[in-house]
Image (cartoon, rainbow, N blue to C red; front, side, top):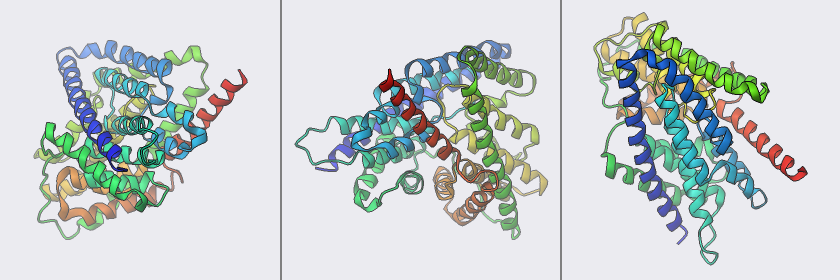
Length: 426
């Protein structure tokens, strides 16, 4: 009986994840088609969509901003009987629809965002809502465990990576002994994943890159790329935090100007430099892994680095998982060119760059490694990927002792508590 609410929420999460994934893909393709035929439209779409997406969040659900993972972490920390109302600000029906519509608006305007972080907040909201409607005579289910399981199920459904969802719950979210709800967690991840697969099929997020017959020296290149990508990922997070702090210090009447400026900056880069700056970056990863040309250059890296920063700080909803993976892939592509690597070696280094950059942002080396492993079904290189994640995690500490998500989580908790005090005083 304790497990039934988890199962119901898992099935609902899988359905929502499928719907969101399909609409996200359609909107991204529509945006690409429009900008391909009329590149100058980016100067209209980007500022307008950035403004609308940011306005929606500010007006209807301020805690639906950005990725959603820090909000879930904050909700887990605040999931106590006396702070339940504060959790409602992070996880609710309102957050779900604002999250979806705002992120799709950002994406249509060329925003370099992903859907994976938002899916995690959406899933956690679904699990919380199911928990709220459980009859009073039903066996009591922990709110904290419900939210944690929802987040894991959301990640599993978004990436089709069940192990990644479980490891994410253990490494990033869980502050309690996981044995208390391990059956519910495992079954929720399985059900949400199977529900998504029923509609999307047993797909791999990235496909099957060739990584056989690796060179004897590739271990050294893995360490070098992991260090560079970890440093870049850590810097990426710090820059976003600084930009958000700058925006919050601005007077309210100037904040719409900031949103429009982010959109115009992205538009200028897309029109005058390259349109590779727009979108989630999944196409960038696929091109590097599955084309004959494995090389990248500093221009592509810069565009994939700055695009998510402009998008994420623009005020709307959108995740950094997929954009981070794409930026890391460009670092691997540059290293493949530096060391003149053959195709299989280059693919491993591209995957290492993805793991390293994502680890630099999140400080979750095992989650990052397992996610990339499951996206590509390349089990033979798991030890290389884990090594890369561990090296990147250590190097990222030199940039900031705390992760990007941890910084945002603390900011959201502080803001929630301040809002409560202001409401009480008024």
